[in-house]
Each structure stands twice: as C-alpha cells, then as structure tokens.
Length: 318
Image (cartoon, rainbow, N blue to C red):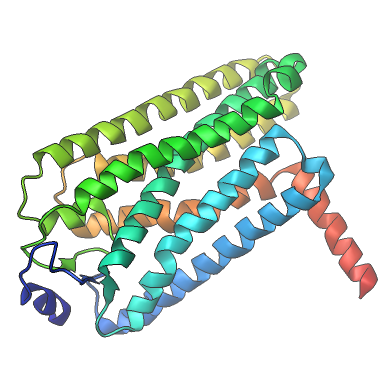
C-alpha cells in the first residue's frame, strides 16, 4: 500500500517519468522471503540447466546435429529472457523503493518481448525438425541442411525483432499520467497500459494482431507436426518403441501447452485479473525456462551419455 501511494502521489506524463515502481506480489511481508527463495531456487536451476546444455552442445562433436543446434538456441533464449526478469524481481523483494529506471523498464520490456517471441518460433522450428526426422528419416540430412537450420533460427530472431521494436516504441510513447506504479513484478504491456491516459485503441489492436500472428501460426505448425508424428509412431510395430516415442512427444507438448496457455491467457483474453496474470506469467518467465532443459535435453539418450562420460572423466581426474 505504501508503494502504491508513493506512485499515485506522482502524476506525470511520459516525458517527466524517470522511473517506475514494480509492486510485485501483493502478499504479507513475511511471505516475501519465501517467494524470494523460490525465485532463487528456480533461477539457479535455469542457469545450471541452460548453461550446462549450451556448453555440452558446443563442445561435444556428437551433438553437432540440427536438433541440438535448435536446442542450444532454445537454451540461450531461455537463459536470457529469464535473466531479464528474475534478478530484478529478486532485488525488489528486499528493496524499499522497488523502483526501476525508465531506461531499465524500456530495456526489460524490449528484451523480454524479443526473446519470448523468438522462443515461440524456435519451438515451431523444433517441431518441424522432429517431424522430418520421424516421418521422413531418409531425407532428414538433405532437408534439414545447415543452411536451412541457420535460416530458421535467424528468422526466429528476426520475427522477435520486428514485433518487439514497434510494440516497445508505441508503448513508451504513451503518456503515463495516471501513476508510475506498475502492478506487476516486471515491465509488461498490460500493466503499463493501465497507467496511461492516452488513447490505447491503436496499441491494443497492434498488440492483439501481433499476438495472433505469433501464437496461431506457430501453434498450428507444432500441432500439425505432432499429429503427423503420432500417426507415424502408431505404425511402429514395437510396443516399447511406441511408448518411448509417445513419452517424448507428450513431454514436449506438455511444455508447449504451459507456455502457450499462459501466453494466451495473458495477451488474448480480457485484462480483468491482475493477480492471476502475475501467476500465469510465472509459467513463461520462470517455469518454462526451467523445464525446457529437463524435458528436451536431459531426458535425451545422447545428452545422458555425454554427461555420464564427463562425470567419469571428472571422477578419474579426482
């Protein structure tokens, strides 16, 4: 309440704003340490899992394949967009002012939008890669060439840029005259819109259009790819082989469902439950980056073998 009052006392337009106040979670003060420890634990797992995957993929020649090229980029994206959010949120648990500079808010907004959109397109590229590997294995090396893989990854980052740049510019040219208190734990588009007294129709239409153009094409690619994969897997005569394939597919689709379900709730539904939106945003800011290395990589036979050999070498040296 004190933080909210601090923000509400200062009524100003965007040209006078020098910082914002991130309210975070509206819970009792004694629960802050619990939430801080939870953030710290999850963020430590994100760092360990994603940095570990990047190092393994770079330095082990056996993982020099299209699938691991995509996985390496996914780990890079997960690592950076969670790092854009989590450290500042943890600092604010102990900060009295809970402030973030105007430039810091712009940077956080832009980088998060860039990486979250890139992740969506990377997941679609990975689904297509698995579709080719399982449904057309004889043509896999021909169709999934190094050039195509690089183009798909570069295209994912490009789509992230062309959607995040206009959204950032349009959002931060608004007049923030209602308050400078952001009812969230990071700078996101909907909490910022609540602070504005500008006409939001154009921004909301652009935001909704971009969200639709990102979510629906990528989710269609993922669903269609996995439908073909499932139909191919059902033809496998071995029961054990079918179970293994279905286990992998269900794990992948589980992570995709968490990410897209939370994004759909956040950006394609009415903004009526701010506290519930904060919980939903945890799914893609912290939960998904933590789960991706476990689901996509650490359950993988090749990665397990590499880790096992690394541990054997370490024990031999000791």
